[in-house]
Image (cartoon, rainbow, N blue to C red; front, side, top):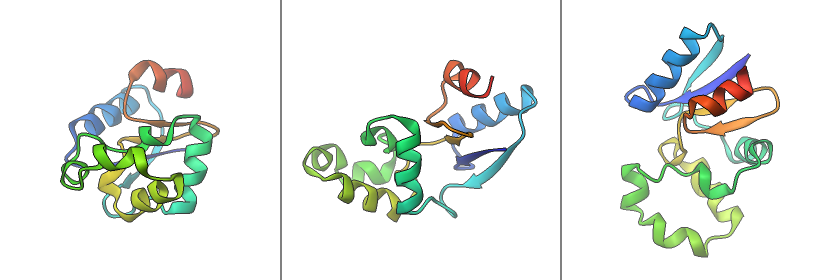
Amino acid sequence: MVKVYCYPKCTTCKKALKWLDDNGIEYKLIDIKEDHPDEKTLRKYHKQSGLPLRKFFNTSGMLYRELELSKKLPDMSDDEMFKLLASDGMLVKRPLLVADKKVLTGFKEEAWREVLG
């Protein structure tokens, strides 16, 4: 079964969950604010995703902007970025889809269809 980390008020998350429901795909819903992935889990997901680590950041979030991370990330090490992501689920791009062998950040229907197809 796939896991989907979401924030209940996020419109993109709502679209992703509707897409899963409409396509009859079972999933475990996890509130990313209340039960966000820890550093070890994020490292695993990052490896599975094949994405640059910066793609795991919710760049449109208030916390991202408040911390001025667009200026700070270029000078941060991966270890520092993992610690930061693990500190608050609101920093993690959502929805975060965790399938058998692939992890996706954000909702792009074509990518989700390819992975869950």
